[in-house]
Image (cartoon, rainbow, N blue to C red; front, side, top):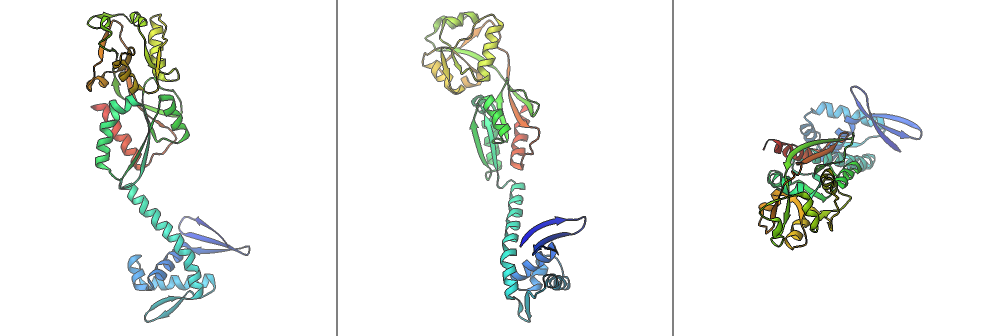
Length: 317
């Protein structure tokens, strides 16, 4: 027996295909049958369904007529299932338990009691924007599970396209795409830094060209940060050939502090206790931004929508 469900403008039906013949049975009949069978009492079922006993009795009789067999044995003590009724209930019970579980899950999700948010984020976005937002989000919605993937901007965009991330929070420059929506959230000012061992670069104005005399620490060539600084150096007719490549942005500052070379980091990274010194460049480093990216064709769940709203609010801070 195959089962499918259809809807017309007013009534829903469940269609049974049995021996090549279609049987159209009202979905409400099965709903009523389920509750009467579950509680063995029409009065209690009627209260739960906000209906009256005559309507339920009539629906049960119509269902029995449609199926061509009695489903209940009626007595003063209640409604007892017949063998045919037991067989039907064993299938209907599973279906309605799934429906009830689905409804409960949606209610919890709507009330932000459960759910999962998938975020693709860069280290700079995490430290300069996301951490305080996530702290507030967790305080408001402790039942929501948060999954954060550490990504470069190209990797974050790829995660969005593949559907493994709901939103991406990264820094400019980004990967332009007609299928994505990008919102600038917060400016990020980056500075050149060195350790105290590089005393010749401290306490005076330094030309960008002078940095070529020192080891440069940078993210890899496949990142947008590398592209950003390559364009900066090229705009001043200078080559950009880092000596050390870091895998993540938060590795650069510790290597600078360890006297391995000079690097470029967000100024906010230096607000923590750091022994690194800012190099006062003559040339201005262009402003970058933390941006929120999502897919145009993606419908976000309640949990992701709320996090998106809270992140977007940071534009006014």
